[in-house]
Image 1 (cartoon, rainbow, N blue to C red):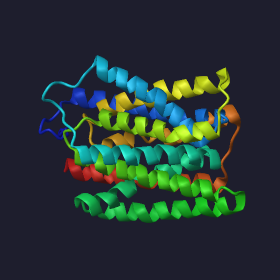
Image 2: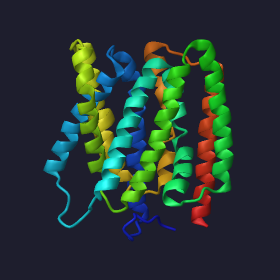
Image 3: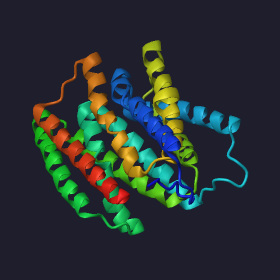
Image 4: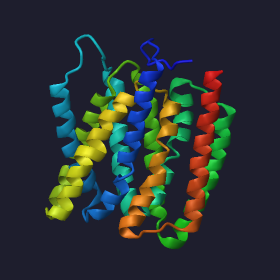
Length: 297
């Protein structure tokens, strides 16, 4: 059975493989965010905004060089703007969480997003969750309880809470993108980065950052590669594989993210946080696999 792109056209195995490869590369690029955010000693909103400024310039250049086909993908204004606003909240909250808690905590709690997407999809677009979603939600709640128990003792409770908010926004963004159907996801991402950059302007004025090579280079890398190129790859891949397949492929991100941080900064999350993160990732992966098997049947 071949997945449908949303436009009624089924794709062959070659296109699906390209899509999966694009999502895989996207996840590797995304996984470096925690490390580079830790390396920049700026206010988190300033980091998020300057990164988005560079990413917006990159995506706008790509759009001008490779414009959409005439009469091709069209975006409805309401879902486009909603996706951009929710994506902006997800980006800002994730950067703030990375500054207030361990990178592993931030990324693992954010990866509860598919469960929130299932619940929000039920409420907003009437996609009723299956039994595996409810089971995964119970396990995710159990995993989150371990994070918050650890947060009370280590002072990371606020950061963990904001990481959960980032996961909810990430899940909501997925639901709104489903509502766009035949739209162009890149336009939503471009608008989100522009909005993020504008929001950061007052913070840049108040918390004037020191522009040095060790701080500017990570921002440029995150804007051009970790965010900009990743947006292009994800927009390409999500057109060729199902959301479930994309999410399973992207599971490499929460595994690699704390590895990069540990290798460079030596930051080690607690044992209970690792157990909680493992429960969350396993629950999401199992739920997605069961859903994929149902789809194939």
